[in-house]
Image 1 (cartoon, one colour):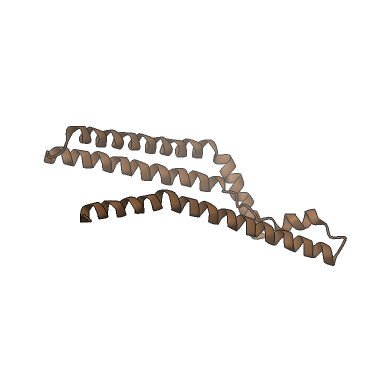
Image 2 (cartoon, one colour; image 1 turned 45 degrees about the vertical axis):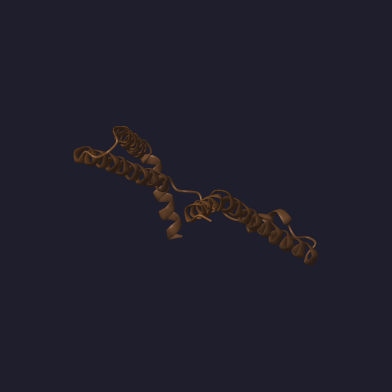
Length: 157
């Protein structure tokens, strides 16, 4: 068998495994985890009911329910700042790379235009995230202050 054909076949098999099998495995494991958690809660509730007939099942389920941590307003704003700065820097890097390739002069013009285009698009998206952060910070200043007071009051208790 030809070595090149063998290597191409191996690469195709690896690609199929990465593109098909791994996502299916991740979804399956996630579903198994949820099913196991539900089964464990069910067993605990059934055991509590068997031991004490007057157990308040709704109260018990509320106590056992996994608590979803809600993001604070400040965390959401900082996430926008992070994404905005990251994407803006990435766009600038693409643009600088395209300028560098253009100055060296050894690239396909179509590829060069594509790199410029991607850099400008990424830069624009990053700037929009940054604008969103600064405008939201200004508009939600009172809510941020109230949230901070609430958290300090809870921490002092």
